[in-house]
Length: 268
Ligand code: ADP
Image (cartoon, rainbow, N blue to C red; front, top):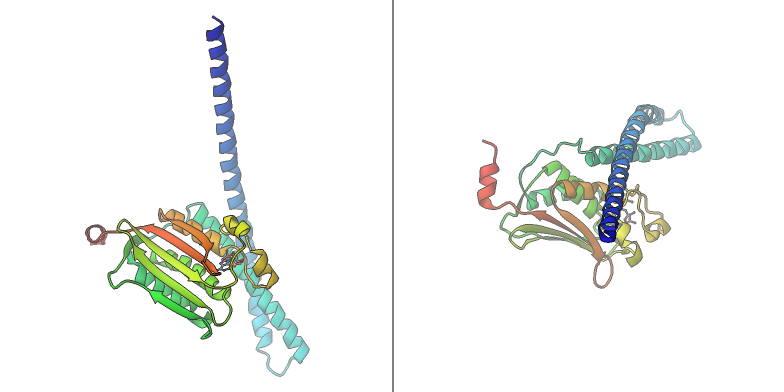
């Protein structure tokens, strides 16, 4: 009899603990949703005044001859910082859209080569001749089912970081390979690297490594959080590791689309 009573007690306690845990998860989810909505709302409302600040500053800067050098410098600083804020606001809006699933992916068969080319084109103006970019993409097209614009945004973020955090004389290697079921995209640089202890946090919102803060590199720390959300939505994974010999390597793994699947999924 004791055994049965004891067993019932244990069962009741387990059920209570489970219910509590479920309530906590639901609460956390609700909190996340409210936070997301709040961020989206605030970002949205910040955009209108910012557009006005940037537009009017540009008008003033166009007044050639009417401004003193000092006035021009001060307005230049207003312009640069307003643009930084604008970037931050659009990243926040994008992130809350991606995370809440409001950003609808336009899925279609896309080759990794196209995505990489698009990203490199987007980065063309930021590339300096002092950093070599090596491209290793197989002749065989590696296809995935994805949203080309979002995948390109993700690759642009990762390759853009590699370029940003690699000093002159360095090399950035972009490589696409496949083991059959998956496509691996790796972006390896031999730049400033990320301290081992900080690696687990690289995909956190607003993360900026101690090294990049020392160097006063500009950034919002949202690019990789956005990239990870994009990869997640494509059923893939993204991770970061140290490059042997120094630097950082990012590896993105996406489910591969076979030739048969890609013809089946091609829009008629
Ligand atoms: P941002 O570049 O705008 O700061 P990201 O989310 O793209 O934001 O990157 C977050 C941080 O991760 C960067 O500030 C930097 O400290 C670190 N990081 C990202 N990529 C690299 C890289 N290739 N090499 C060294 N540090 C990097």
